[in-house]
Image (cartoon, rainbow, N blue to C red; front, top):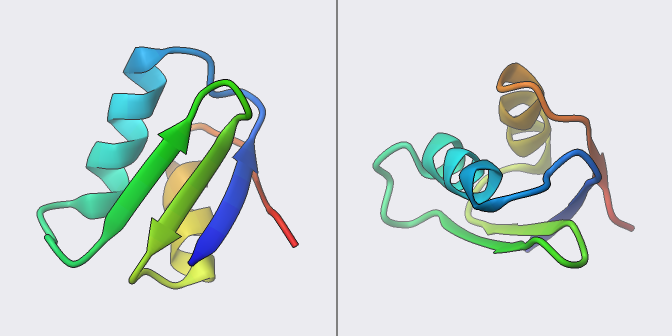
Length: 65
């Protein structure tokens, strides 16, 4: 599971946009968004792909080590 800090994620709309973009209709991809800690956890999608997609929709994600 990859974890990413997304500091510019602030509300429920952000959460929905992120989940929609990362899953794109693939039921194997699991996304959990924690707005309080600003952490997005993703299963079954490569870290590089997650970073790319989040940047594409205007966020500035960082991989959590």
